[in-house]
Image (cartoon, rainbow, N blue to C red; front, side, top):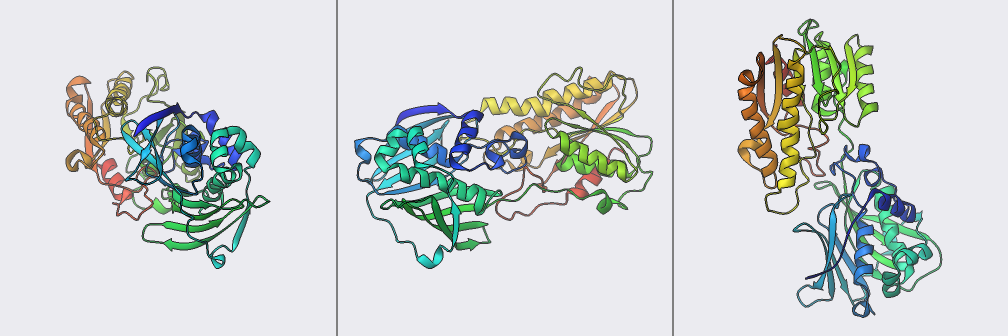
Length: 446
């Protein structure tokens, strides 16, 4: 296939398409909300990318074509450079691939068949489509000339359906197969659940709009993972188990850091948690700890910036729990991604060392450090080479910390897959006990 167009989607593009389509799902608009989904980052509306590709490839070759089949293989993130590649697949009709790096993220196939009819009994639900044909025609004029502005408005309606209606806010669009039909008046679309496969959390919908009919597939994704509350954890540690300790928990606003902070506080430690984006989440953790009689302060710490000056002056910590992490499942393509490796090394090696160094400068007291490594260092799962390399480098650094920073010793624990926002999956996956692992981590420094 030959490249015919390229672009980079911005956050402004996201807001514009949300207004156009009615799909204002936070995973497409809000970095703070998106980081708590399986996406990890703000995701481009899949239908927006499809409409852009159709607009780029529209012309005489699309005239008279009636069906459109789309498969979203991978997510497109804001800031990704996307290319549209045009050609044919196996002698069939026109086809387009949207490519990021060397990975095909979206596959689009166009045909001349009439498509399968939609059973009337399968479409008992109704929603008002926000997209207007005139606005879609103005935004994608060449695609509107080829398919009709009404069909483009219905395609935008599919985004609204999946992202806001069914499955709704906790969804991931998998794809759709639709056929054009004679445009009817109105902005109402009808749908119904044809299949709900609980094994894969995959929902199949029949859909009927003024200008198209067909089927949509979407995953139900898990909501943000809630860690156990202080009340649920009370009794797991003695009230004075960590008395006299002053602990800094980097990345303590959610996930394993949140859980660690609560356990430390229940054991009598004076805890300070950090956040980079989740200010309200960090405040909620601190409030819960204080309400239970614990001590918990909050500071902002962005490990992507120089550490110097971000930690409170004159405050001495004798324990460090380091949970700062980038999104770990975002690799594209098969080749070694040096930019991704550099990002991972920044989090797991450079910034980790800078934090240790900053704590050492506050005094000559002994400092115990917990470094969460991963079983990925040994098991080497596909598409996680850069992650495993950076964690392995972090382990080497931890082994050498006592001679690099006097009085600083680190405990490394290769954690299995634990239930967090990062590891949450649309399909059921067995995970270890986060509580047991964090208790063991804390006690290793007692």
